[in-house]
Length: 165
Image 1 (cartoon, one colour):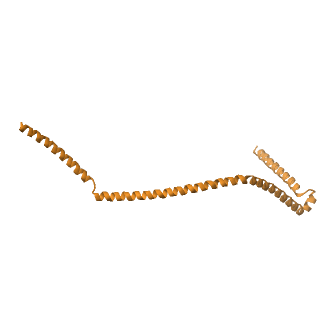
Image 2: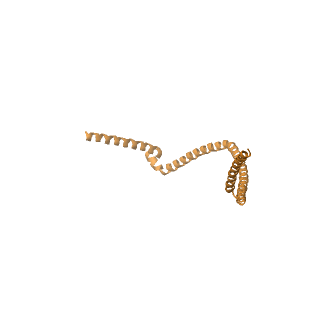
Image 3: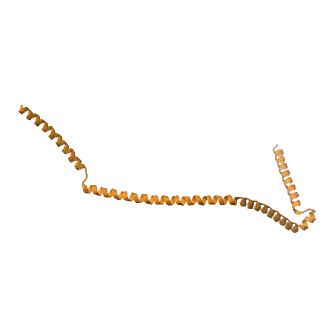
């Protein structure tokens, strides 16, 4: 009986030994896969430096964001002030534009009157000979010339038709 127990106990020990060997191999392969403490420390330092750099960038970005927000508020206030100024000035602007248009018309009338006076003075002798002022004569003459031109065109067209026939 003791021999049977001994064989069984050896069997148990062999299984246990195999399991422990497998566990040892797994741990050794895991140990080989892991880096040395020095390499891990270097990587940790590298990551730490990157984190520090990113934190600084983040602080600068926050400061820049605050600056931009402050500028935006100032610009919005300035925009509101300008819009208020435009609303305040708008009636004056419209009134000045109307005055300018009115004065422009008056200036044109005065200029035309002055030009007519000069033309009348220059063509005084001609106007007395014709019996009318130069503008009326020109208008009459232009109308007559236009009618004559139209008649010539009509006659030429008729002559062309007759020649063709």
